[in-house]
Structures are given as structure tokens and as C-alpha cells.
Picture (cartoon, each protein chain N blue to C red):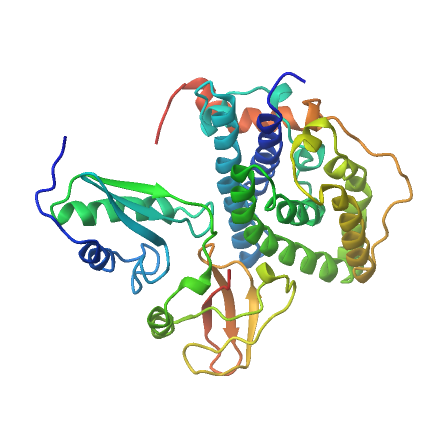
Amino acid sequence: MATLAINPSIKEIWSWLEGVPDPEIPVVSVVELGIVRDVVRDGDSIVITVTPTYSGCPATAVIAIDIEQAIRRHGVDDVRINTQLSPAWTTDWITDGAREKLKAYGIAPPVEDTPCAGALRVRTPINCPLCNSTNTECISQFGSTPCKAHYRCKDCLEPFDYFKSF
Amino acid sequence: MTADPIFEFALRMGDNCLVLGQSVSAWCGHAPILEEDIALANVALDLIGQTRMWLGLAGEVEGKGRSADDLAFLRDARAFRNCLLVEQPNGDFGQTLMRQFLFDAWHHPMLKTLAGATDVRIAEIAEKSVKEAAYHLDRSTDLIVRLGDGSDESHHRMQAALDGLWSYTGELYAADATDEAIVVAGLSDIEEQYKDYTSKTFDEATLTIPDATFMHKGGKAGLHTEALGPLLADMQILQRSHPGAQW
């Protein structure tokens, strides 16, 4: 049986996880995105519960590996990843700090009025993350990754990603 | 019926996603515009992700150690439980889009309903998938309206696609003993919701639902059209030729 070489507190483990970036959007961590749901100790194991963002998102497998490696790097070998579907991941779990980071990175953070909440074919005005103009248009609800939509600013004329509400 | 109804039901949900996801992914690199190319690939990706959950559940319920991959790659057409609509060929972009809309308009309310299923495994998969299906329906509705009520050429193509595919929609909501074994409130309302939503959208799109009332069926029982065989041959050849091959 593996024993813990060190004995980290749950709080410490959370702080390690805060250092694990999202593989597609490296300015935010998997904790800030709300992907890590729980950290518990089960005997000598550390069990980390994660939830997938989109069911087919290829980043999900990478995130599980990155989390495992981050924990091992701190000297804990016995780590288990538990995947949980419900409650389903929502962009409401993205922290305020992460929203600011997304914007600074050029990705407009999610706002309300989502197809998921029943608002089909509603195109909420999204602020351009570069010039703050609201004079923007949705080019496509499907962008460079499953979680992003493709927008264009009609003032500064730049295209930008919108982290769509989910 | 011999098999566990949950096994059969999970195969139906999973096979719908798998067959449609496989077909739609064939557009990658070939769509009329870049944004649509990306959208099609994203929708296909969501559907394949959902397939993994449904077929994973089917394998678990069956209890014979078959994984989602085994079920996807090692079954013959006769063992597939998808509805006939999703196996209809891609055709032109209009036909692909019409097939998607006719599926999404059922898939979304169906998943919404299933999120309240008594079986917690079904409910959890539905709760996760319904959010993705909402974006699929948002896109396909929008494009049906824009192309139906668009140029003469786009209108003509969308009407031709609707004429060709409408008779495959009845099977979606026609419940049989397997569907009825899934304990969930509201399953019998899907047909009405489907008809309301599609007729409202087609009105806005200036498209006309065909008069004929005949509806094809058979897919849920494993009786498929000739389109499924070639699709499976293409999808399964690697695992059939090199069993157990991995990335």
C-alpha cells in the first residue's frame, strides 16, 4: 500500500490545483473554471472529483492527466480522479477573477440569456473584450473550442471569442 | 423482449448520437464556409461525447464487459438501434442541415424530459447532454429559417430536403415497450412538442410539411435502410481489420 510521503491538508491540495491551467485557455486554472468539484482523502488516497465541461471536449482527458501529475509533483503518489456528471457543469461556476482574466486574454466572459436556459435564438449583446464596444455581432455559436462562440466587433473590426453561457 | 430495457434504451440514445456524429464529422474540411465547418465539427464532437456516455451505460447495464468502444466498433448493422432518420445520407448541405434540425427538435425536449428519469444514470447523462442539444437546436433552427426563407435556390433545396426526410420523423416519438419501460413523466408529450416546434419553425422558414402521413420505422428494432451498412463499414474498418488497435 502506498503511503503518503508528505501529509498535505485538503486546503494545500486545493492550492496545488489552482496552479493547474486549463489546457486550451492557460490564463485560467481548472479550479477557477469550476471543473474541480471536490477534494477528499480516502485512506491513503487523495480523491479529486472533476466534472467535464462539454461531453466531447478533448481537453477533459488532458485535464485529468494534468491534475494527477500536479499532485504527484508535490510528492503524493496515490491520487484518484473521479468523474461526476451531475450537477452538470455550468459557466456560473467560473469565478469573478477568472472572468477578468478571460477578458484580458481577449475572450469575452459569459453573460446570461443562454439557449440552455430556454432562450433559443436570442443573441445577447456581448462587449468586445478589446475596445468594450457593444456594437458586436455573433458570427457563429460554435467557435474554436466547444465552449466558445465566434463574434466580431463592428467598431474596432476585430474578431473575438466569446465564452458562451452554458 | 429479452434484453434489459435500459440496455436497449441506452443503445437507442447512444446509436442515434454515434451514427449522426459520424455522418456529420464527414463534413470536416468540406463545409460551404469556414464557420459552418467549425460548427459541424463541434456538433459532431458533442454527439460523439454523448455517445460515450450512453454506450458506456449500455455496456455497464449489460454486464458482459463490453465497453463503449466495443459497442460502437464491433456490432453489425442489425444490432444498431438508431432511428432511420440519422442514418440518411449527408446529401447536400441543405439535407445535412434538415436532418440535423429534425433530430435536434426531438433530441432537445427528449433529453429535457429524461433529465427527470427515475433511473439516476439516465437522468445524469440527459442533464449533461441537454445543454449541448440546446445549442444544436439553436443553430439548426436559425439556419432552417434563414435558408428556407432565403434565396430561391436555398428555399428549393431546403424544401426538397424536408420532402425527402419528413417521413423518417414519426419513429422518433413513436414509443414502444422499451421506451415505456423508462419511468419518466412527460414522455408522451414529446410528439406534440415536436409537431408544434417543427411546424412553427417551418412556417417562419416558408417551408411546407408534406401532406403524406406515412412514416417509416424499424431502426429502433434493428431494421435499417441501406445507408447504414456503408457508414458502419467506414467507421468500423480499423477495429475490424486490426482488433484492439489503439492510438
